[in-house]
Image (tube, rainbow, N blue to C red; front, side):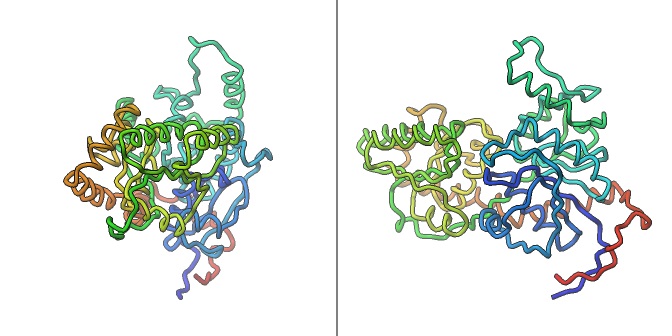
Length: 409
C-alpha cells in the first residue's frame, strides 16, 4: 500500500461508448487505464457511467474506482442497442476537443479523434478513413460519383457537427495499428503507424489436448458480419464427410432478427449445433478449454480478438485467409477462402496426427504474441516516449487544485 502525490502527469483515455455492445475497443480502453493508472493520473472520458465490476469481468482487468476518474461528456440518449455512432461520434468529438487541454496526454481508445492538440490514437478498424482522407487539408469528403443515399446524407449532416481543428491528424499525431495488416494499408496511403496487438485477457491454456472433446467452438457477437451461418455450413460439410463432430456457438445476440434466423437454422440442421449464449471472464476460458477445434468465419477483420482468444485457449483454430485472422493464425493449412475449402482443410488436419501436432506447436508460439503483459509494457513505453517528445502543456499555474492531495492506492 503506497501513498503517491497526485502531481503526476495526467492522461485522458477517450472512449465514446462503454456500453453493452462490448468488443475489442472496450477491452483496449480498460487495459489502457490499467496499464497507466499506477504511473499517471488517468481519467476515462466517455458518454455514460458503467458497471465497473461487469467490465472488469469482461475485459479481465482488476480496476477499482480509486484507480481512475471518469468524466462523462454530453450525448444524445439512445437505446443501448442503437449506438448511432454517426451522430454520437461528432458530438463526442466536439466536446472531447473542448476538454483535451485538461490532460498532458490524450489517448483515443477507438480510432482517431481530433483533440486540437497532438494525441495518440489506437485504431480498431479502417472505417474512419473516409472521414480522414490522406489529403493536405484533412477535410471530410464523400464519394460524389456515387448516388447520394439517405444514409450518406445522414452521415454528411452528422459530420458537420464535429468541430474539427483543421490539423492533419494522420501526419501529425501518433497512430497505433492493431495489426500489421492495418499498418500496411495505412502505409500504402503514406500514413505511418506502429503496431501494438490488442490485449487478449484469456490466459494461455495448459490443458491436456487428449482431455478435450473433438467438437468445434465458435465465439463472437451474433451479427451478420460474423457469418455464423457459414460456420454451420462448414461443419455440416465436415459431418457429411463422416466426422461426427458438433458445433458450439458462444456469443451475445445483438441483432435479434439475425439471431432468430440462426436459431431457426440451428433447429433445422439438428442437435449437433448448440447455441450457448454469452460467456465472460474465467467462465469463458474454462468453457473454451473443453474443445480441440475452433472456427472463425468473419473475413477481412482488422485484428479479430476472438481469434486470438481461441488460439490462447489451446484450440486448433481455422479462419479466413484475410486480414487479421490470417496474421494471427499464420499457417496456410488453417486458413480458407470458401466454405468448401474450409471443410477440406479441416478434414486434412483432423485426419493427420502429424498435422495436429504441428498445428498445436505453431499456435502455442503464436499465443505468446497476445499477452496483456506485452500490451501494458508497450503502452507505458509509448506514453513515456510521447511525453518526452511532447512536453506537457499544463504548467504549474494550470494544474487543478486537487493535484497536491495525497491519494491512497
